[in-house]
Structures are given as C-alpha cells and as structure tokens.
Image (cartoon, rainbow, N blue to C red; front, top):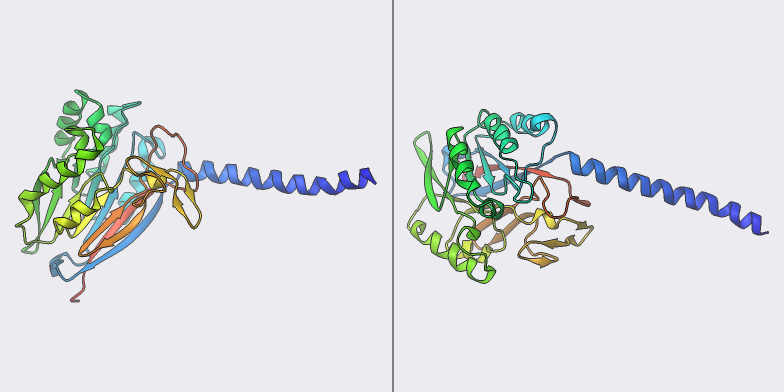
Length: 288
C-alpha cells in the first residue's frame, strides 16, 4: 500500500518540477529580452502637422545590454521608425557605472532619430562623472534638457518639449523634491503649445497636473520590479510597496502620464513577471 502511494506521488513531483523549470526559464527569458508597448495619445491640442508623430521612450537602461553592443534594442528602435527618442534618465548605474557602454549605445541610437535626454537619480549619484557624461552625450548629438524647453517644429506647427533634471541633483530629501519640480516648471506655465514633459519621477504626477502639462514621460519605478498578477508592482523607489504609479498610462484632468517599466536593473538584479520595456507613443490629433 505504501509503495502505491509513493508511486502515485511521483507524477505530482514531476509536474511540480516541470512547472518550476518553466518558471525559471520564463524568468530568464523575460530578463534578457525587450517587449514593446504602444500607446496612442489623443488631443485636440496636438497640431495637425504632428498627427501620427511617433516618440520612442527609453527609460532606466542602467548600463544594460540586449544583444552584442545593444544590437537587439537598437534593432527594435530602428524598426519602429520614431520621429524622436526620449531618454528619461538612469542611462548609467551608479553601482556599476560604465560610461563606455552608455556612449556606445548613444552613438548608434542618434543615427535612428533625434534624441533628447534628462537625468535620473543615478546620473545625480555619479558625481563628477556626470559632467563628462553630459559633454560626451552632447558631442554625440544628444540634446540634454536641464530644466529647459525647446520647440519642436513640423510643417510650420510647434509643440514644446520640456526636460527636468532629476531632483536628486539638488536635494535627496524626498519631502522637498515635489517643491523643487514645482519651482522648475513655473517658467513654462505661459506656454500655450501642446507640452510634453520628460521627467524621471512618476510619483509627482500632482505637480505635473498643477502645471497643466499635456503629456509626461517618466520611468524610475522599474514596473515595481516584481509584478503580481491582477495587483501590479510590488515595490518602487520613492513609492514603497504597491506603488501607485509603476507602469502604463495615467490620466488626471488634462494630463496624461506614461510610465515605462524601463529596461535595466539596479540594486535588485532580477525582474519577475516584469519584462524590460520599450515604449512607443503615437500622437493623434482628434480633430481628424
């Protein structure tokens, strides 16, 4: 009788072992490949000339490489044929900074489309190395936006692209960072163009809403690092457990914010149920 029970248990153990193996293989696969998420953002404020204008959003690369010299990521970007590429911080990682890997990627990505960059907290944390990184980015053709605006023009029409430095550049106290971002946005309040904001931090959506920004592109949350089905992200920097803004599109009044799950990792070296993500946004004039 005991032998029969043991024999009956074997298939159960084998099934469990198989499921564990599948989970391990899926986790490995989902950490070394990149998925693409598409968003269509509609507004009557988007000029007709910018209808179907495509933005590729690269967030939180953290010196990661997908394929030799990031060939897989670059091929994905190229295949999407974006009109511009927004890089919203943490291109490097302060824990294992590799400027060369970052610049090798930038040298190639600038050949795909015009690129615009804002700092993340990891750029703030690399100290004096950041000035060298910034100079090199600009030498390679990247536009680095440091609390400033530039006008994007197309067929005589304009939209505004605003870039904010990560608040860690000034103060690492989380409780004053909303005030820092609030102050940095004030000079752009009179701008009547459709306004796109590049800011590393999604947790300050209320500040962006206050200043009536039309579209915010952010990262930083890493999708919550571990994503629980039907619940969402587990933990994110500056938001703690079960973060409110960890992935996807958030709409508050007239402001749309798209939070990328990002591409790389930092302190926690692995993602679970949280594939690295390249975000593609297409602007649509709803008067069409």
